[in-house]
Amino acid sequence: MSSAIVRSGGDGHVYVTNQLDDTVSVIDARTNRVVATVPAGTAPAGVAVAPAGGHAYIADSGSAGVSVLDTRTNKIVGTVPVGKSPSGVALSPDGTALYVADGGSNRVSVLDTRTNRVTRSIPVGTSPVKVAVSRDGNAAYVANAGSGSVSVIDTRTHRVVRAIRAGRSPVSVAVAPDGRSAYVADETAANVSVVGTRTGTITATVPVGEGPFDVALGPDGRSAYVAVLGPGKVSVIDTRGHRVSATVSVGPPGTDPFNVAVGSSAIYVTNQGAGTLAVIDAKTLKVTATVTVGNSPYGVAVGP
Image (cartoon, rainbow, N blue to C red):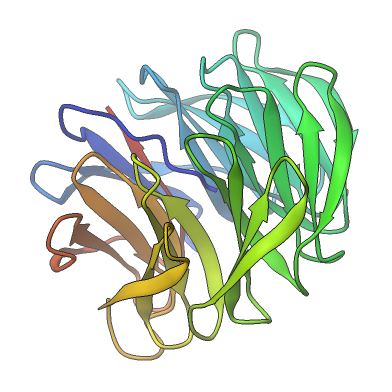
């Protein structure tokens, strides 16, 4: 989840969690080189970077915590206990709240980033995997893989206000910049469902290939980028026509593109099987770099 935060003026660093190494790779986006490898908790999964930089938050799925990384020193400065098997993380637009999908506890933990304490625990569907926050910060959307649903949380009341049926195994969700649509990757059904957030109904279904595991939107909302495990590609959805307008190969079958984040001029994709990060030029849709990271890279986030 991670829904990507898009920044202008160029990307600074890219953060990749390496699940089987218990580390985070820090990559200089200007040179596409790993500049630090930071020990994290057990089996790190999702990662999110504060809008103004300063800290990154890592869901340690094997140790039921969130590691707080000081991005200036590249050191872990704290660990916050959350629920079982946390995976997806997403920050509020102002960076003061972190939403954590606790997959083994069927809930979302809300962490106050000013105190690094959990202030709320919100029951959602079964096996939540990813969470995304709307640009206005008023709603959080949670993909529940086990119950085939997306829970909609009112972030002002911290209550689930709607459960949307969204396929067989929704594993990722991203919200359009205007907040009117959510894009839900269904790993089992090999498609992305487009959900109208006002009505809570599916308005379109886009076949993308076998095993879509993550989806992220571009800054203008005109394109959605889907990491598709089976064929080793990224499918690009034209959100105006609700169709795949391009595909980008990041490697042969077994590369396993897993998570995707959108920066100011590039799309970043973790390749779990290959142990790499693919860098795709956002204009040409060509892979411009392949960066070797750790063992079984999972989450990816872009920071200033």
